[in-house]
Length: 392
Image (cartoon, rainbow, N blue to C red; front, side):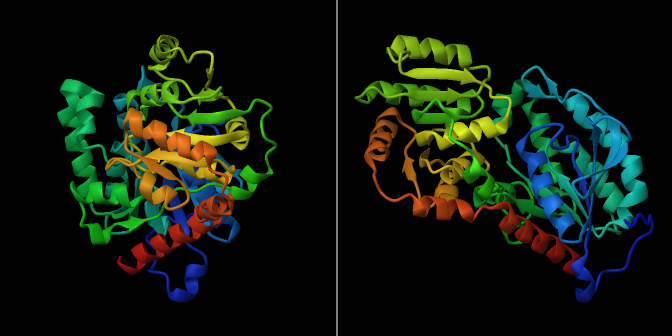
């Protein structure tokens, strides 16, 4: 039977750490909403639950039926009703504030019943509810997927100062921060905690599942997968394709505000007969199957807190080309198992050309992907929770 004590529990001894009581806080819950942050909670949470740990997820009720339900060994507890998390193309500030306010009473009553409380930082405001609920009773672990700093200027324009202030305040509340990459950890240290206090636990994938998928019928020589926004630099990829010889089949999977402009650019560059825009694929397995059928995966993005598509592509057996940029974690994700280019048309074209003719064994690529398997990541995350308990 699951424990639901509402009073503070004593610090577990080493013997008791076989079963840790974990409370996750996220406004969106996978698989009812599909995104990287909520999928990380699900993949880690259900593995830890399977190992005998007690896992609860507090979120909005995007599921049907009771507000409290079991799901893959975890308890889902609705603390707010379903609500659209976007306002236009941006995350809704009102939604974030509303969720933080609605979650606060339940967290205040229940935080002491957990050994650790884990908050997915973005969209920030729920972190403050967790801070108040956890204060003096339960260690608060925060998960940082990105740190925006100056990117707020582009994202919010004249309201950017507000975003920067909220981010900085969230970075400085009492917490045990976990960053998904060394790149994110370094940026976090510029606005909040000392680098030594930040634990790096990367995002992960289910390598076995990716390998089990049948490759898609439509095959691409070059493949990009991601949201079609300016930072993804898909225009640089299209210009690079225009410099490459041969009858290449190029797939640009995804959707976003830049799609129309990118389709027009493909026509202007004379590569529209080589480039296909399949749009957003509803099933993630369809994306992975498309990767399984591709030769080279290209990510020209210059802003990636981690870059999960790079790992997925390596697990799918693709040769990977990414760009080397201080705001992207591509170098630490790809390591020596892929290609890194400067984010210019000339360099990207030359690097893609090298990857296309590479006939080397892909064992090293798959071995690199296995370092990010969710089983390994869940073990690292549990170590971070235990470290927070020791420092309590």
